[in-house]
Amino acid sequence: MGYMKPNDERLLFLPLGGSGEIGMNLNLYGHKGKWLMVDCGMSFADSYTPGVDLIFPDPSFIEDEQEALVGLIVTHGHEDHIGAIPHIWSRFKCPIYTTGFTAELIRRKLGEHGLVDDVEIIEVVPSQSFDCGPFKVEYVPLAHSIAEGHGITLTTSRGVLFHTGDWKLDKAPLIGPTCPSPRLKALGDQGVLAMIGDSTNVFNPETSGSEKDVQENLLKIVGKAEGRVVITTFASNVARLEAVGAIAKATGRNLCLFGRSMQRIYEVARAKGFLQDFPKLVDVDAVDYLPKNKVLIVCTGCQGESRAALARIAKDEHRDVSLVPGDTVIFSSKIIPGNELTLFRLINNLVKKKVNVITEKDDFVHVSGHPGQPDLKAMYEWVRPKFAIPVHGEARHLIKHAEFALEQGVKKSIAPKNGQIIEITDEGPVVIDEAPIGVLVLDGTQVVDFDAPSVAQRRRISQQGQMTIVVVIRRDGQLASEPVITANGIPKFDEDDFYYDLIDAAEEGYERLSRKERQKDKAIHDGVRIAVRRLTRSELGRNPTVDVVIVREQELDLK
Image 1: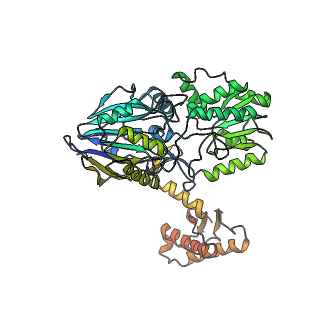
Image 2 (image 1 turned 120 degrees about the vertical axis):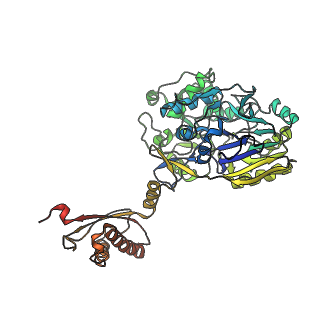
Image 3 (image 1 turned 135 degrees about the horizontal axis):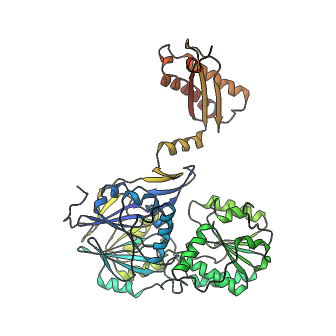
């Protein structure tokens, strides 16, 4: 039996990701024995997980409820809302509903994983409602930093929910609808039981600002630049691409796109009717031959990603272009928390080359796609929800948003945690149960648990180092020779005194074993390993991974 019975009238909300961190958004709504998923995103791993780039929410709960899952509703095409789909969709298999631009982005991702023919993607028309199980769903167009951002209304027998998705106020967004939208006020007049809303910028006392204003200021900066200009931004920001295209035309510069994701977004945007007045692009391999004051490059890497185009350019590893003194790099983006050190390292590399660097701290070159406090206040005035459930943020964001919502006249608010099953009643949202949660990681091409042995072992090795000890044992149970030791990441290992201390420790660990224990590989492994780790712990303060390779004389057929 599933978590809910078929006639269960309760209205439930369950975040499996995105409530407690920024990224990995995955939310579930339950009603009448059915579940509806909203978004399925990823996040980037930190240095604590070596060899892993991407992390995803664990969908085990809904995997067990697979028969009750009626669909996945995708609000927009940012990676933290769609990035997990090709990696974990097979665990819950359901139709995907979204609008055309986002649908094409998802199809391309699925195609890279050989899944495009397996997944049913249903393109929906904004502002036209449709049924998905016991939910009547409507996409409400909102401004955001990507084409086709939407909020979602879910009409149920218990009331109307409004899931805002990611949004901002922008009276001149360049691409997409202006916001405020008349639909929001109409929604408030209709009556909203609860609003489940974006919390990312809740600490910002200012409004988000307009893409049109960014375009005008970027035009001034590029117009004054003497050398080549590189603008790095989030590839998904189609409005920023639109602005850069207009700037290239106005300044007479040749425009070139660097980075695979940038090229992919451009192609999808063009195919879906955006960027129709865009200038003709210059091939990447022609850039270095053009006059420097006639070049404008847009590239990926605004967060310092090591594999992105800008990082390779900064390290002189890009085959088609290298920057020289007098060139300008504009970071038309916000620094995502956690990326500061990597990004500052990249900026310093550019400055050392005497490249002019401009960030959002230096000039008005970026506006956020998320609502500041004035935007949130306006949204609450329009929608007038009875209750509020903040999502899309760290704990501090959610708690602050819950307090802010009460100040706007909301009767009750709750700051959720991933895994909390919240019933939305006429009296307010209340936590009634806990669901299992976790984090999955992409380890090479395999999706495994965050604490999988392969990941945990690599994490340990990266912190403590690793040794391999080979012991050769004669038929009489004595060591045939002194152990051979190799190591990685161990201080002092190349010093003779310490190396021979390790050999002595390994021999002593073996000699302490009884005749019977020497017949058992596990006993030998444990005895040698413990002795060597005890030495490294006392001498170096390290507790390395130690592998013991056992070779017996009869196996070698030694004479």
